[in-house]
Image 1 (spheres, rainbow, N blue to C red):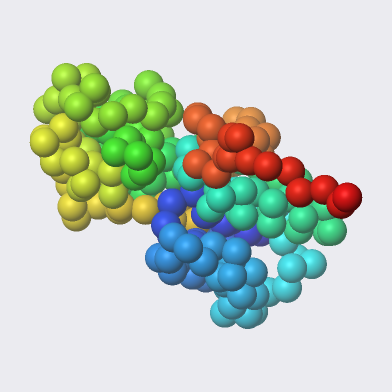
Image 2: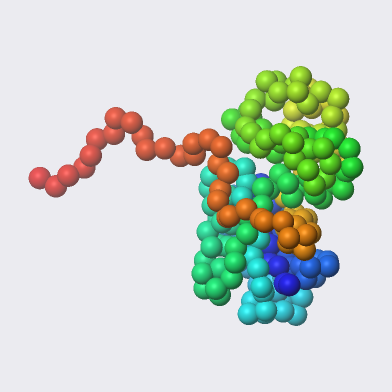
Length: 219
């Protein structure tokens, strides 16, 4: 097994290569505006660092969000293109599940990432592997009672400390492809099915066709 994992659902552009027992190489850059520019060079860099070629990869794993439309689709489109070109299976995993896995927590907690528009993408977990609620998108104040008293992980929790009282700044804020690959390897080894690589947008994209514009036509 040789998993190539990538995620662009958060400001992190993250890629990792995993052999089923551990991460061989990883790249993590944070730039919310350059996902498309940074992702493929990161893939090449990770493969080179591990001394492996794309022809050796057996599976692709991609974070399915939730995340902003523009960034999220970069990772999904790249994984789909690589899978089609090499004839590889492409597996999807919830990005919040990857962040949860990276915490290593064995107690209930919540993961929240920045959804913009003064909202968060969030999910609640019984432990690092078990999601019990979500993912969903909400205003922090609207879910404050539901997450009260729980440790809170992620950039969304850090942004809204009034709603997330148990913020853990020492734990991951953004997605990590290494954690995503580790979770995928664990699930595959246990014979548990992974998800299809279908995006979790949860709401409409920010960019929309303007209303009331005048069409330009030739006379």
